[in-house]
Image (cartoon, rainbow, N blue to C red; front, side, top):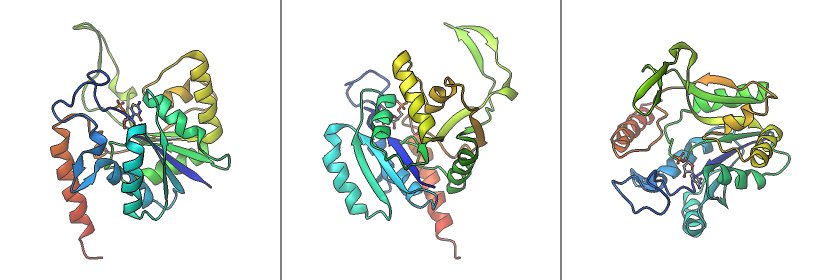
Length: 242
Ligand code: C5P
């Protein structure tokens, strides 16, 4: 079974509009340093160390390709880590990476560059589930009550026991994901995750594999404090005598 991981990392990393100046340290968070390595490199290492993964494709902005290729070469990863140029949106970046995959790929796992604390067990579990069913994502149950609003008025309270908060990796059979992207392009549909594209195909049900809240998406400045804590916990575990 050939499993390829796609990591979209071509974002400007700002929710304040494209080209906005770096503000409050949230810009290009995939390259912020944690213990001397960019967050993206921590993320890549998690997949390199997973036996089920064959290769990793990182989508980057054109301007970042040269230095990132050099950075990756210096890491001497034990697996192929290659780069492609990303696009204007996360979806376009994943689509560009998808176009670069060889047809003998069985499963594609898409993972956010800014989720470096994904646990190896979770990666393995979601890949195994997708190998059986065709499509699987990581999710966690919400602890807060989620409400639908219009402006600042509550319109509905969503039954919490029927909700999950989705994370990545999201893993799909290659042919299914390619069809999903083709359909989305035809319909001009833009989703915030890959699963939403596959769901609208209505070919397979997407399975949910429960993850943990350790798999944070580093998004706001305060997330870096949590990230440093999680990283120190990881190193503490690694240093335990075997
Ligand atoms: O903006 P958001 O947090 O949803 O971005 C998620 C991921 O998609 C980030 O890792 C970001 O670098 C990536 N992205 C991309 N190409 C874009 C925009 C975002 O690869 N054009």
